[in-house]
Image (cartoon, rainbow, N blue to C red; front, side, top):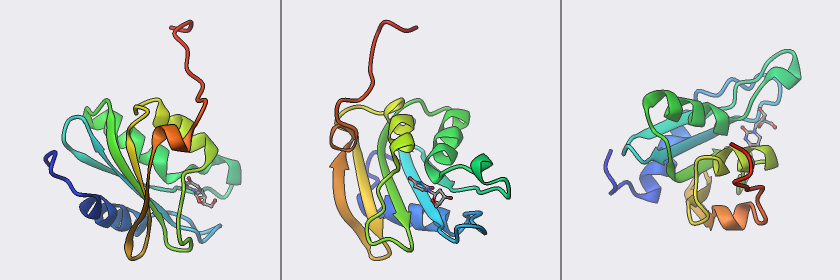
Length: 135
Ligand code: THU
């Protein structure tokens, strides 16, 4: 996929990803689609576990797919949960996204009709943990 990917296309991809969620316990499927610096769109859904803390969110699924597919930077990302009018990434996922994003990376918060709100990473995670002392 090219740089021309529209928020609408990313929303539709996130909705398809949500359909693959493994969420038998919460019954709260979440889908994520992100476009990476390699031009590809990577998908993720939440994957729950009977041992509840072992489950994980849709965002790390998509980030793992991106890293293994060769992408290294998130250009834009859409998130959707069918049971929420506006699904916003949880706190832990904001930190995970930030690892591969920039302050101006766009995040599309969606419902079943499409993108309802567009925010930047700086808005989602103000005063983010960031340092060059480590590593
Ligand atoms: N969930 C996500 O996939 N992403 C988020 O940002 C928030 C929560 C999932 C985790 C769990 O499987 C379900 O939603 C209910 O919390």
